[in-house]
Length: 180
Image (cartoon, rainbow, N blue to C red; front, side, top):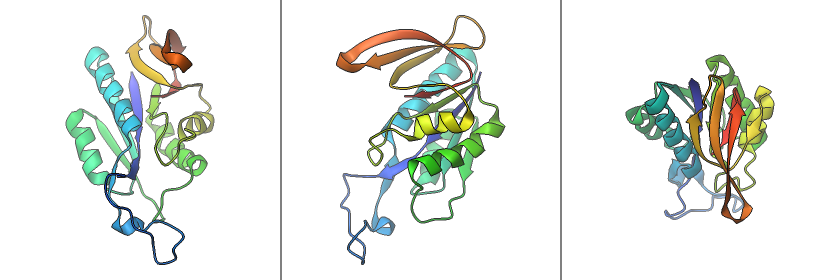
């Protein structure tokens, strides 16, 4: 199985945030960034799949924030390949534009499974994962709590959470995008 994992940088909300000179936006140059927690869970799921089934794990991230440390950590956890996307701006793109950039990087990897955090605290509606699925022309299943290799090739077994903490186990035909 060939897995691609999208890793995003988000503001570290524990650190103080400053407003820029215009008074209308945050000063991102003085801000601290950390890996998005849901994306970190996606990476952990990919590493578990690698350990269980010999999958290959590709990590894709935009060159924003403290991404180098995040990518070194991903490599130390077991990622086989790191793809850092150049960014022409000082701010990350909006979710739909970000998904288009990620799709350009993920498509050539030939991934059977794409794992993305289901949301980020700077993007609470969780748009990147389904937008990425649409850009890749792949099915999407969100709010996934666990992934295992399926009983037959080309399948994955996922544990999906519904409102009220109701859990369902389902088989997903690959390739697919999962929001972790």
